[in-house]
Image (cartoon, rainbow, N blue to C red):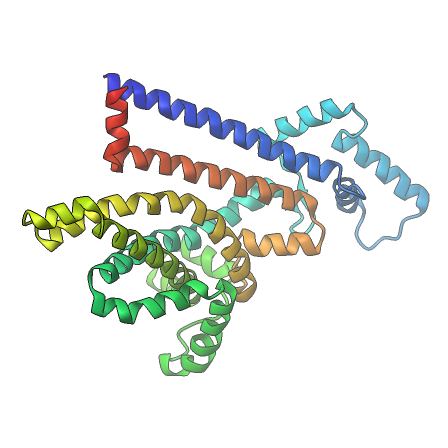
Length: 346
C-alpha cells in the first residue's frame, strides 16, 4: 500500500510537471504568433474571410481588417487575448486552415491518424530490432565486425537521403522485378480506402505505398538503436558484476541477460528523445514520399503562410512529446527494479 501511494505521488508530480511544460510551450507559441513581425495571424484571417477571385478596394480591405480584428479578439486587452487563446486551445478551437479551408482541429485529427499509422509502428519496430541487433553484435565479436560498418552507415544516413535511395532503386529501378508492386507515393486515398473499407484488395494497395516510407524510417532508426545498445552492452559485459558472475560459473547467456536488463534502461529513455527526431524524419519523408501526415501539412502551411495550421501542428507536436515521455515514465517504474526499490525505501 505504501509503495502504491509512493508511485501515485511520483506520477502526480510528473503529471504536474508536464502540465507546466505544456502551458509554457503553448504560451511561447502564442507569443511567437501574436507578436511576430507583420502580424501573420491577422493576415491569415483576412485571407480566410476575403472572397476568392474578387478584387477588393482599399476601403473593403480596411473593413475586412476591422472584422478580422474583432473576430480574433485583437480589439481586447492583451491579457484577455491570451485568456481567449488558452480557452480555444483547451476546447480544441485552433482556427481555420487557409490551405485546407477547414477547421485546423478537424484536419489535425485526420493527419494524426496518418502519423500514428507510419510513425507508431516505425518507432516500435526499429526499437526492438535495433536493440536486438546491438545486443547480438556486442556478444559475438565475429558478427560484430560485419554488423558495425552497416550500423554506422545507417546511423549516418539522413532520412530524406535514404528515402530517395529507396524510391530510386526499389520504387523505380528494381520495381520491374517485383511486378511494379511498390508505389513511390502514398496518398490519402490509399489510407482512407483501407481504413473505411478494409479488405484484402485495399490492404494490398495500402501496403504497396506504405512499404517504402516505413522501411526508410525503420532502417535508419534501427542503426541508431543498434549502435547505442552495442555500446551499452559492451560496457555492462565488462563491468565488475559481469566479471564476478563469470568467475563463479554463470553461463554467458545468463550474464548477457542481466547485462541486457541494465543496458535497456537508457534505451527506454531514448524513446522520448527519439520521438522528436522521428517528427523531423516525418517532415523529410513526407517531402520524399508525399506522405499525407503532419509533415507534408506543415510544409504546405509554411509555403501558404497558414499560421493557424502551423500553430496547431506545433501544439500537437508538443503534446505528443509530453504524452510519450509520460508513458516512458510509467514503463520505467515497471521495468527498472531500482526505481521500485527506491519507492520501497522511502
